Image (cartoon, rainbow, N blue to C red):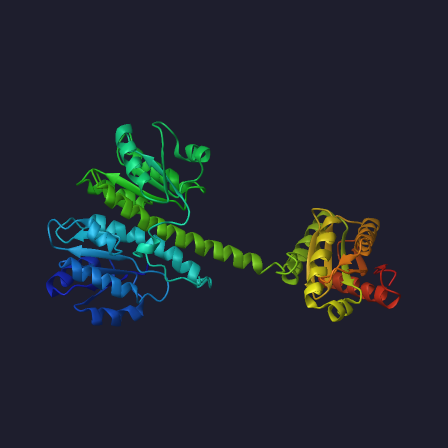
Length: 457
C-alpha cells in the first residue's frame, strides 16, 4: 500500500484529528467534509476510505454511494464513530471492514491498515500484470453475494471445546459455510491435509499458551496450502498487543471475545468474498499465462513456447553430448478439406491430427502447432533412426484410419514430414528447424505422404 487515505467526515475537528494520527504513521491523508468532495478525491484511487458513522443512516448511505463509484478493485472502507455504543454490525452491513471508535487506542487500527495494505498490494500487482475480470467491481457489501456459490470450509480453533462448538453451530446455520473443529494439540498444516484446505480459519488467541494463537497464524501463512485462506483471530477485549501482533503475523481481521454470532458471520463473509475475488484474479492470471503458450484449438504448445523449449533442449544436449531431433509435419492438401467440407470440419481434422500425434510420441517429446496445418516435434536424446521411426509411425497413424467429417463422410488424410537431427550438439536451434522445414518441402514436392531426412534433402 502506498498509503493514500481518504477521510469522509462532516465534523472537521474529527477529520483533522484522524488525519494527523495517520500522518504520524506515514500515511497520506486527505479530508472531505461532504460526499461530493469525497467523490472528487476518488479519481486519485485512495487505498482506504474512512467514512464517519456518527449518523449511522447517513454513513451507510455514503458507503453505498462510494462503492457504486469503484472503477476497478474494491477500495476497503473503515467506518469511524464517536458514539459509545454503536454496534459494529451496522458498519459491517454497509460493507465496511471495521468500525473504529475515535476514542479507542490507535495501534490496532494502524496494524489493520498494514494488513489491508498487504492484501490490496497483492491485488494491485495482479492488476499491473493486466489481469481484469468481467465483473471486477465486486461489491463486498452486496447482499446478493451473501450466499456464497460454493460451500466454504471454515476451520475453527478455540481452547474450550464448548465455545468452539458454539461458534461452529452459529456459523453452520448460515448458508454456504461448513465449519470444522480443529482438536486440541493438532498441527494446523497436518490437520488441514486430513480434512481438506480451508477457505477461512478462526483462531482464538489463547490456544493453550498465549503465543499459540500467533503460532497458528504464522503456521497458516507459512504453509502453501493455507496461505490464501482468510484468517480471523479472536482475542480478549483490551488485548491490543495481541491484536497488533495478530495483524502483523498475517491475520485478515481481529475480533474480540464474546463477539455476537451475527458479527462473526458478517466479518467472515466479508473476508471470504475478498478471498474469492483474489482467487479468481489468480486463476485468471494462470489461465492467461497458460493460453499464452498453448494453441487454443488443439491444446498443443504454440510456436512461442516451442522456440524457448528448443533453445533449452539444444543447451542441455550440448552439455550432455547427446543427439536431438526436430520433425516438422504438414497436413497434405488441407485447403481442400476446408473448401469441400467447411472450416468446422477442418478444425475437427486439426484436433484429431493433434490427438494422434500426441499418442504416437514419447512423454519427453514436445509437440507444438506452428500455425495453420503445420506442426513440430522436438525430441531430446534422439538419434537419426529413432527420429525417422517416430516420424514414420506418426505418418502411418494419420493415414489410417480415415478422418470423419461433419457430414458423416470419411476422408483420407495424409501428412508429409521433414526430419533434422543434430549429431554434435553444435547446431543452432533456428538452423535445425529450418533444415527440417526444407526436408518437409522435399517430401511435399516428391509425392507427399512421406518422411524425408534433412541430410538426404
